[in-house]
Structure formats: structure tokens, C-alpha cells
Length: 191
Figure 1 (cartoon, rainbow, N blue to C red):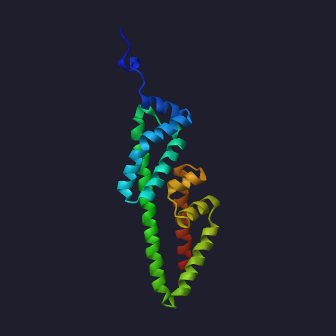
Figure 2 (cartoon, rainbow, N blue to C red):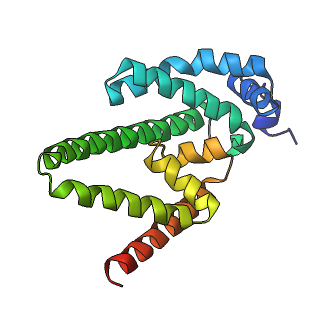
């Protein structure tokens, strides 16, 4: 009986790159970058419509490839498909951050319009003070996640990368922190 065809066929260059990448070979990372960065940059440029943002996404994708190389499983799919998946998530994160920035700008614009009405200004300042006080009462991890999300405009994925915490942990801290803030602020409003 002859061996299966997969056992006799030579490994493709992509399979060798994938094995080297998973093993931590930086030369393989460089080769993976040369091979797939044009595709990643093209996808990001077309979706985002901004070359600078697309370059940032490309850099983040390959940083994610390197950091997440141990999570790549060749039996689940081709290396290129895995990289495209990472690219799609980074593009989505970038679009979300862009939306949050636009919302923040719109909010700032409406605050400037409200600033012309002097009676509303003390209430807005009081609201900010109350939110800061309640935020300070939260457990440290919840505070950190919410501060990174709202003051530094980071997505949950970016917070996980910055803190080194699993994404699920970041999501849990954000959900619990927002829930506690909502409860505490509601209690302040209706004692």
C-alpha cells in the first residue's frame, strides 16, 4: 500500500513559512510580511479610504500575526486566510474607533453650543465630577478598562493588547464597570 498523497508531497513554501513563523523565526515573519503586506494594505486602503490609516492597520496586522503566531493552526486554514481574518478585525476596530471619534467630535460640538447657554454649564460640570467620582469607586481593573476606552479611545481589542489581559476579561471588566456606574449614577439621581 502506498503512502497517502499528502505524506509524499513536498511542503509548499507557505507551509514552511507558517511552520517557521509558529516556531518564532523572525526571518519567516519578514517573508510573511513581504508576501502578504500588499494584500493587507490593499484591503485596508479600499475599506478605510485613508492611506495613513491603512498603513497603521497593516502594521497592527503583522504585529498581531507575530504576537498571535501560537494560535495559528494550519489544519484550520491557509496562512493567508488567517492573515486576512486578522486584517478584517483590525479594519473593523479602526472603523469603530473612527466612529467613536466622530461621535466625540459631534458631542464636543453640541457641548460648545450648550456652552453658550450659561445655565446648562454648571450642570455639565457637575455631571463630569459625578462620573469621575463614581469611576474612582470602581475596582482598579474596571477603572483601567473604562479609562482606556473613554479617555484614550481604545477598542476592547486594543485594551487587551495594551494590558496583556485576554479579550474576554477586558469585555467583562467593561460590562461590569459600566453596569456599576449606571447603578451608582441612578442612585445619585433618585436617592
